Image 1 (cartoon, helix red, strand yellow):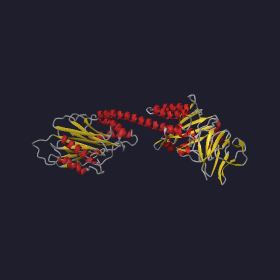
Image 2 (cartoon, one colour; image 1 turned 60 degrees about the horizontal axis):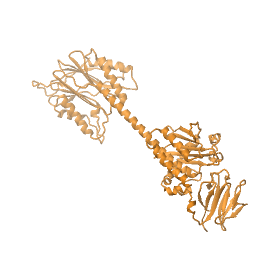
Image 3 (spheres, rainbow, N blue to C red; image 1 turned 90 degrees about the vertical axis):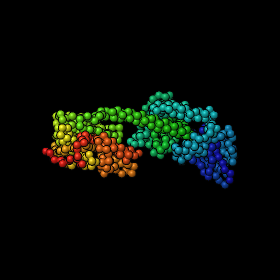
Length: 572
């Protein structure tokens, strides 16, 4: 049997419907071909293939169905060229015929996927956007098609280089009203996927005036979750909208709501609504709006990326300033004391770090050397380090015993402990006239000492708690005499726990070997260790702050010591 089709001639946007075995035409969303015109009944007529040909059956008790201007009763066999009237809509029945060039149709199913409920999958709009100008001009009058094409170009040009989201939304809605005269209002609602929150952004009437339009959250969430557009020609008589109280409150007759999608992310919805039942949205309108929504989503994505880049630049600028401020809390140059040599290396993993080191001016003839590591990283650790830097200088004033200094410092840090912050710290006090070194430790690595011969030993110190953890903690001291040429090294765990690309750690054994193989003076020891650690890390990002402080009495030709003289005594 010959194939057949229906061509829309009047009362509805031009379209071409290929007939199958059976097709119901009407205003209902459940109709096989939906015509959203108020004079068309919900299920108006059924077209069926029979042995004698295609027949049309009237299903409308009110408006009836006409064939060639004659009202039919029951069924009637159709002949090629018959005109069928459903309310104000006129169709032509054609057998094996090709539509003339002037009647080129726009059956939406030829370039987009629409399901039985009238929803359109957003991704299918890509094919429509690839259509040629000639194909698109055929969808309506030449001027109307040209205006729709121009809308896509204008929207892209207007919003492409704009990073103000509200301006983007207002611009788009204003341009949409020019192309969609049936729209009495329009709204944009953003979607925050992390908070699962809908955020009304802009609502305008077709004059561009700000309005307080109420939108259905249920409708919008359905569009977002299903990533589909929803179209109705008569929302008041559409089953899908029966539960949406706002539609009935506002007397919306035609509603078009589409998701704004870029990549895999839904940025919200774009909605147009109309209140005139004589002028409704059709499926081509949804396709066009999906194309615009895609451009808007891309512009929003770019705007947010731009905002993040600006924020990152501000953060980088602030962090660079913070780095300068933090450096001001740390020594810029080692002290110059006759008969002694000092050197330090400091390399934060981030712009700011939590490592601390310092040289303390105590009573005459005594100098303090400290190194520590604040818990945590980043800004909070840097702020705590800055506080420790000030407190240790204040608490050390007038004292020359490292244990007493740590006890006073611990007392104030415990009293004002915040968010579990603490610091490990080792403090050495050198009596420069006798080379007597007193050391107290608060949970930090014990110092390493390199003798003139190259041997390396670790000072034996009692284990203890970090500062800021235990009230009334005591920090016993040990005392050692240094020989000329001895070099003491204080360091943080950014040295021994540095990791390479295979996550191997630098380790204590490698550290001692590097110290032993260095030339021995504080500067050479510090630079050798830093260079060795950096070489070990390679291209891997530094995972912790690196601090090295070296000091010791200058070497003497009269010294015959082969190993450091570290016979220590525990002092009360």
